Amino acid sequence: MSELGQFGLPVPPPTVNLETQRFWDATAEGRLVLPRCDNSGDVVWYPRERCDGPGSNSVTWFEASGRGTVYSCTVTRRIPGSWRKAAPFVLAYVELEEGPRVLTNIVGCDPETVHIGQAVQAVFDPTPDGPALLRFTPA
Image (cartoon, rainbow, N blue to C red; front, top):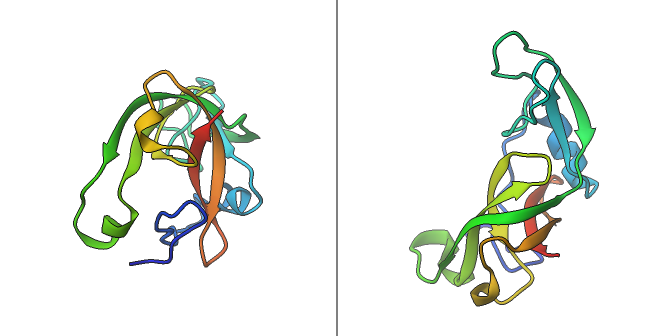
């Protein structure tokens, strides 16, 4: 099992490449930085240096609010493998204030209290290698 982070969940080091470097560097500083398509204005998730929309490959990076709402969630009580000791934990889609939905964990609360529509705020769980994992806690 990878090392456990400050919220009791595994913190496997992310794969960082040239396209995702800005995102991961910002997480290490406790900031959520995302790309916005210069053509459509849509926020791009998963963060990368290009937009998949028609007519534009150009993006501009900006500091996002870190605020969102729980779009969907489940409490994982039993799981095989390296996450077994972390159960129960919440796996959720959070819809960011800026638009995209992010698959993540809700931490810092009783898993049974998490619900659809709940306001959440980004928190950053450092990995042993520097970048931090984006997770959310009730706002």
